[in-house]
Length: 180
Image (cartoon, rainbow, N blue to C red; front, side, top):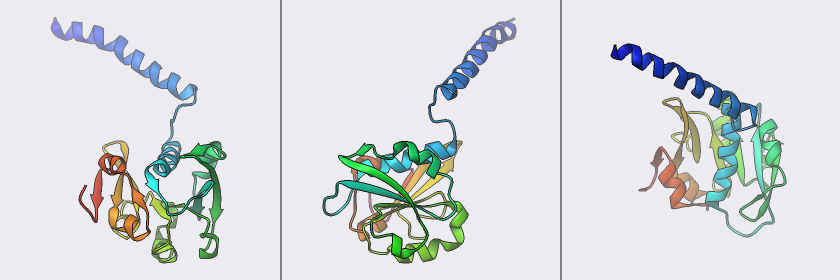
């Protein structure tokens, strides 16, 4: 008897939950992993300080990536009082105006070279390669238990003369290179 009652209650709840998910994607909320990664990348800019003052902040996208389309909707917005710009880069000569550099997992074989290009420059490096933080990158976007989370290499951020907020470090799944 109890099982039958639970099934009667569970069926409408399951349907309501499914409809809520369908409606949220219809109304333009973040629905894909690429959209979520783009949102993370923009939000990291709010929690990191760069040396000097600028009127703009640039996210640079390296190689064959799939976030450009989603980041385009953020172009021109104010992020921490600076206008956001998004552009593609393919080599070290294009990096001086970058504040954040995204290296996608499709470029995993070139991560070592890219990290040498940006060494000690005030550029926040972000990737969706799981070993990125261990390899010397600043932030790795990680899929964990069905959720997108991030790991931080505090030593890399410090070496780049950047300062990550304690709030961002608390939200990280894992922080290496310094105590939380």
